[in-house]
Length: 383
Ligand SMILES: [Cu+2]
Image (tube, rainbow, N blue to C red):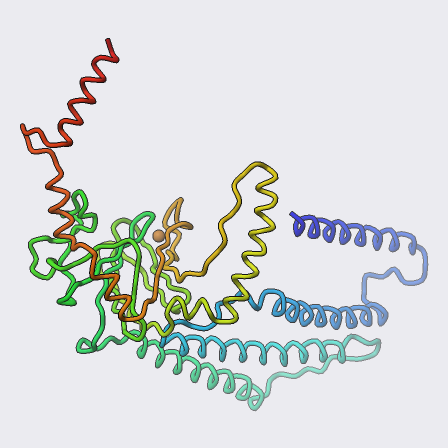
């Protein structure tokens, strides 16, 4: 709201200035020079205004870096993330350098050669040497940058079949994520959308030997120091599995399996204890405390304190609740990870348990008694 007001004030001020200049122009009617052709005075004004604009670009850039710089993602939590960050930082430095040099030159020469009475523009057809320089340097720099990018891409995306990884399936649907662990055999059982039924929400083929030890969960735990090989599916529309802290993203496409592999290098606890994160959480909680005070005075519940967690987000606008499509990711020590996974039932067990609690046809299972009672009560109420 505050920003909107500031923008409104600036817009109104500009309109006021514009109108004042018009009035000023009208008062000058009849005075010496009212020609539409720019004179030396006009050219000087435009020249100095250009320098003003140059100063604005730099002041705004520096202000933006100080004000919003800390909002960007900090330390990468995956091994390959360092390469991604490196590539990004090199690109930023290049952009800043080129922009800093070219903008100064453009504005300086525009000022230096601004129009002057009696000066005539020089007709300059072309210079092969200049063209080679300004085409050659960007070409070489871009080729190097793209080369490094391609090398990084191949290195990140290549997963050696013989590599010791943990295979996990990520299943996307509007608007949630489900994970399936491949169990002791480290091979995911087959799955098909036609097999979706009851608790088997991923359509796992329960007859497949590889599916017998598969475990389906709603919270993703992964161990530190081990490469995790994600196989990604989608049930309905295009989604995108986005792990911002791990610098990983892959599309989830209905009808096909996509992949991504990365190795976490910090546990959730280690990442939470990093000074930058402690500071960030402190700031967020200070904002929450301030907001809670307003909420409480309005008779609403206060906000819970914020604790950092890695997240898996959806990065494709996939529908109305897209913004809320996320799953908590917890990086454990290998021991904690094993302990966490050890007491999870397999999908086969889950289906068996669900079937066992179903009412047997004609029998008096707990559920069927309940259903009959409800029907009887309903009849009495109707009377
Ligand atoms: Cu989505």
